[in-house]
Image (cartoon, one colour):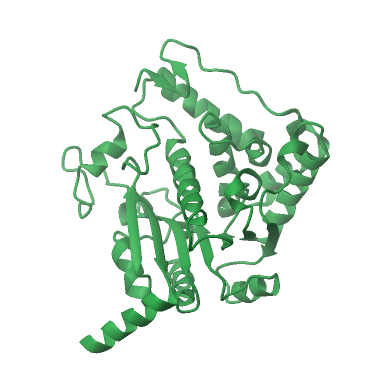
Amino acid sequence: MSDQVNGLQDNQAWPELNLPDLLHSDTVRQVHATIEKEWDFLQRSACQTAAGRAMWKHVIDDPLAALLAGETYLRNLHEKMRKDHINNAHETSGVILAVRTLWFDSRLEDFLNSPSGREAQVVLLGAGMDTRAYRLSCLKDSNVFEVDFPEVLELKSTILQAAKESAYESQYSVSKAKSLTRVAADIRENDWMEKLQIAGFLPQKSTVWILEGILYYLAQSNAMQLLRILANNCVLTHTVILADFMNKSSTTLSNSVFQFYSDWPDQLLPSIGFNHVKLSQIGDPDAHFGLLTDPLNLFNKLRSLPRSLETNPDDGTPCCRLYLVEASGSPDQSSAHNKESDSHS
């Protein structure tokens, strides 16, 4: 491990977990009790993601994350990180989530600040406990839509309302987006796009689609249907997707709950209609953020191996990769692509 992790020198004790007072209020406690009792693994992954952002708060400014994560997930991750620190692990638990969050933030901000991205709509599919609308000022000219299961959005709204009414958290619970609309829908069904349009989404307007930590929970057929719907939007307007993909080795572990995978998303996405695709792996120059300083960390090892390898030749372990992918297309490029396809047919 590097000399310093999470702002600590190696010889420093791991800090105690400080929970926000509001987490112990009746309203918020009741919400998290309901989550523990009723939500399935896909829905609970929203709380795990929030816990990661809360525990990596030295690099991710997400003041509402701890409230949305709940005590159980915060304590679980805190204990894993403490053990990693004691054991001098080459990477600390939650670092993938921290890098992933920062990559999505940076790519979204870069696009919204570009000439083609000004006033673009932003749609978060499987939004979960995401709070980008509350923490990213680059959304000030964007209409933001959060799409998720009705029960997820309902309990999320209850927590955020409690934050709004509290003396301390109220300063963080004001949206920075031009508008924020929550759309209750299941992206595995056929009616989510219709529900999104009823809520005010404009298909002809430039859009960024955020698919963070969601695709690999879907069945192969559902994930491909979703990606094709988004690719079809390229013929209507400038369309950008930001997504993370697991490779096959990541989804075939014995205890895996993941289904959809793609070993080559940089080939898959152009085949369904996206014109520009940029792929990064955790640890690449644009997917590092100074959080992977130990040269022996797992991600550096993976990046040194050909992507076609399913197992590491040195130790026989599966090469589990997470790809961070930005893809885009627009009507001009789509028509040019179609003409080129016609000329080869």
